[in-house]
Image (spheres, rainbow, N blue to C red):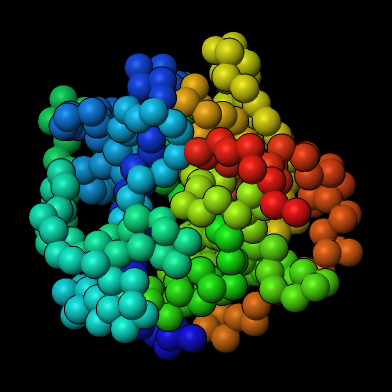
Length: 320
Ligand SMILES: [Fe+2]
């Protein structure tokens, strides 16, 4: 594992979501999550939440099928970027340098072993509020005060054919530190949680039963409070958005959660994940057995079946 003190990757920069229902998906993010369009390019719009310091976090792209495009990560310095590019290249999954998108500087593209497109950069442009100036100068833009008011992008959870290989890649190539994992009785992990900063997770891999490759389980946004997540559930039923699971509390990492499917089919979580921070530099990984996970979520709700089967793109090939 990479030295904890490195902190080379600061946080997730952005995620590209693919949708077969572009206008409906765009309305989900702008009308219900209170995100703002900052740029449009080809078949894509770039969207920001109200308190992110960079220009955007979601690139929404019209596509034949739902799924995930490129995830970007911002490093903590130019030196950190060079260290990570060297480490990525050493894994054999490195790609090439490209121009950054919408305010981001030189960007190095690569994939994880499962085929998820990724990229890393350091230079970035800070958002300067104009018609959405906040009352307090320590906030990126004005609190929108409608819909879910998603404050920031919190984490991404990929599906992967081989959780172990992909988790090791995040550790070795990006310096991710493991926080929790589910050990399978037969060996390997059903899921593995990694963090770059003091949040308890930023990137997660879950076992893809279809063995398809390059699929998304979900991305998560962070509202401020549990109450915001309860209110979000009310807003979603009023607007015909499918609620898949929650509100409830995860056993793993103790996140209060709500899962919905946006109109394009991608699973979106609203997670109060910031309450529990990992400040211990020697934090031991927390490992759960299959038997322990059978108990369900924190307060006993069983994990619903579609949580193990639905991902995007939707594929109907189920492994034996
Ligand atoms: Fe999550």
